[in-house]
Amino acid sequence: MNLEEKKREYFGTPLSFEELDPNPLQQFAKWYEAALQAEPLEPNAVALATSNLRGESRVRYVLLKGIDERGFLFFTNYSSIKGKHLEENPKASFACYWPTLYRQVCVSGRCEKSSPETSFNYFQSRPFLSRVAAYTSPQSQPVPKERAYLENLFNQNRLRFESGDVPMPENWGGYWLIPETIEFWQGRENRFHDRFVYFKEAGGQWRIERLAP
Ligand SMILES: Cc1cc2nc3c(=O)[nH]c(=O)nc-3n(C[C@H](O)[C@H](O)[C@H](O)COP(=O)(O)O)c2cc1C
Image 1 (tube, helix red, strand yellow):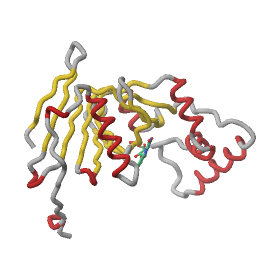
Image 2 (tube, helix red, strand yellow):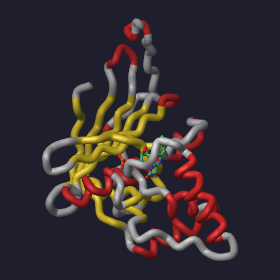
Image 3 (cartoon, protein in one colour):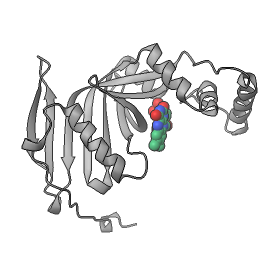
C-alpha cells in the first residue's frame, strides 16, 4: 500500500501574531466556535497522551466537555489505563485536528480531578443507558472474550436501576487538564504553516512565540 500518494494542500487563512488573543483559552474558544460550524463530526474529540513513571506512554481519544479559565475538562474512568497513568504522573497532552479549517491545537499541562459535584452533574446529564454502561464497564480491564459477559452485566444493571437513579461509580469522574503550553497551528500552502505557542510564565501571564513550521 502506497501511503505517499495521500497528499493534500493546506489553504488555511493566515494566522498572525497581531490577531491572537492574549489569552490562549480565549483563542481556543474562538477556534472552537469556528470548528463547530465547519466540522460536522465531534470537533471536541482530542487525542490525549499520558505516560507512567516508567516512561511508557499511550494516546487515545476523549471528548472535551468543558473549557474555562482553568483549562479543559473531560470525563473517564479513574481506574482505566489513563487514570492509572495520571495517578502516577499528572502530566498530559492532547492534540485536536480540524481538517476542514486546516487547524491543529496542541495542549500540554497537568491533570487534576474535577470536583465530585462537577463529575456528578455531568454523570446525571448522560442518558440512562450511558450511565448504566459507565456503571457496568470496568474500563480497560481484561474481561472474558465473549461479549455476552458484558451484555449480561449491562442488562442486569439496566433492570436493577430501571426504577431509580444509576449511582455514579466512585472511580468515575472528570479531569481538568490545566495548560502550561498551547500551540495553534494553521496549515498553509506548500507546508509553510503558521505556528504560535503560548507558554505560561511563573507569574501566571502568557508569553507567545512563533515557531518555524
Ligand atoms: C471519538 C472518541 C471519543 C471518546 N471519548 C471518550 C471519553 O470522553 N472518555 C473516555 O473515557 N473514553 C473515551 N473514548 C474511548 C477512549 O479512546 C479509550 O478507549 C478509553 O478511554 C480507554 O482508554 P485507556 O485504556 O487508555 O484508559 C473515546 C473514543 C473515541 C474514538
